[in-house]
Image (tube, rainbow, N blue to C red):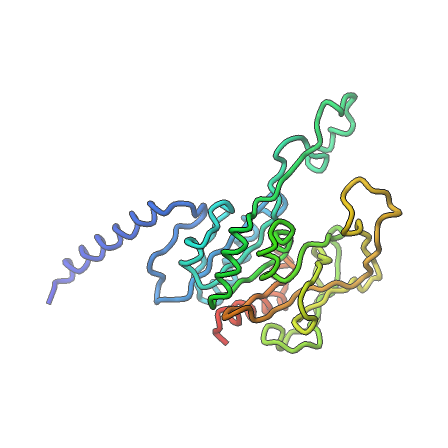
Amino acid sequence: MKRADEISRRDLLKNAGVAAAVGALGGLETQAVSQAPAGGKLRTLALIGDRYHNQDYIRVGLDRLFKELDLPIDYTSNYDELSRSRLELYQLFVALRDNAIRPVTGYSDALWTDVGSLENPWEYPRERGENWITEEQGAAIQDFVAAGNGFYAMHNSCSLSLGSKNYREVMGGAYGGHPPLRPFQVRPTANKHPITEGISPFMVTDEQHYVIYDKDPKYIILEAENIDGLTYRRRRLSQGPGHGLDEYENVGTKSVSGWAYEYGKGRLAYTAVGHTIHAMWAPEFLKIQKNAIRWLLKLS
C-alpha cells in the first residue's frame, strides 16, 4: 500500500503530463481542453463571440447555465480551428457566433458614424467582409451530429448557413434578418417536445430573428410574435444590398423562433433568442436552454 505522499506525487506527475498535452493541442482561447473531465461527465465545446456579440456576455450566460446543470463546458472563439479532430473530444457542440469576418477592408458607418459626414467620404472605402465557415467545417459538424452527438445552434449561428450548404443541411435553416431590439413574445407551438414541456409564453426584449426554416413544420417548437403589431420589412431574399424600398417585403409580426429534431444518430436544436444577457436569462428561456441541453445530451 502506497503512502499518501507517494500518491500525491504520482497524481501531480500525471496532471503535469495532461497539462503538457493540452498545451501541445493549443487553440482554445478562453479555456484549455480537459483530457479527463471530472466524474466522466459529458463535455461541451462552445464556439462564441463575434463583432456584434461580445463573447463575455455569452460566456457569462452559458457559465450560469452549465453550472446549474452541473456540466463542464469549454470555450473558443477560434473559428478557424473548428474541425473533426476538435469535435471528437466532445459530445455537444454549441454555436453562438456570426459567420461574417468584418471588416476585412474599409470602414463601417455602423461603428464610425462620422465617416458619412466627412467632406471627402469617397476617400474612405465602405467595409467589405467575408464568410469564415468552409464546406469542410460544415461537413465536420454534420458528421459529428449524425454519429450520435448533439448540436445546439443559438441565435445568430443561423447565419453560418449562408456560407455552407453542409452546415445548413444539419442546422435546418438560415438567417433572414431582424428588426432593432424591441419587446416581443415567445411561446411554444402546438408541436409537443421535451424542450418546451411546461414552458409558458414569455416576453423578451431582444432581436426577433426572422429565420428561413427548411425542414418539416412538425419540428418547429417555438414561435415569436410582436404583440404590439410591429412588423418587419426586409430585402427580398433573392436580392442583394443597394435596392430600393419598393423591392422590400413585409414579413409580418410572427417568426419561427426554435426547432428540434433527430439527425442521424444525433440531435439538433435551434433557438433564436440570445442577443443580450437579459434575454438569455429570461426565466422561461433559461428553462428552455436547460431542457435543450438535457435533450441533446440524451439525459432526459
